Image (tube, rainbow, N blue to C red; front, top):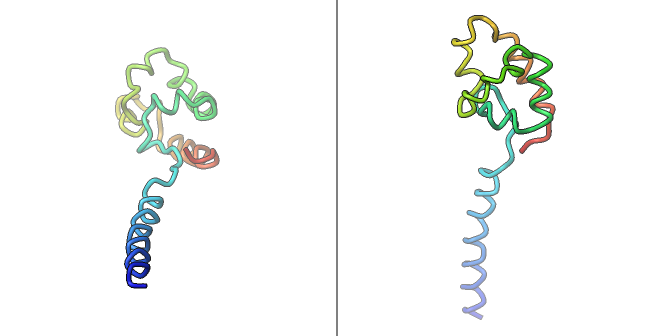
Length: 100
């Protein structure tokens, strides 16, 4: 009987961290401040959003040079071609996509 109680305690103790880790690994939505341009451009749905809202930037062949940066990070270098309003609109549209 005591062995069963010990096993039950061990199982209970090990299941708590598993539940907690499931919360930390939950899928997330893309954002202009946390998702790199390379990830966005590799996802056809996200790329379509960028091409619709910021065609001058997303359609530029040079965008691949910024694959490891976020849209918010490159905003100051776009000479006004990427506005706060556009970033906000992109974030709204990206939030509609299924979480990855």
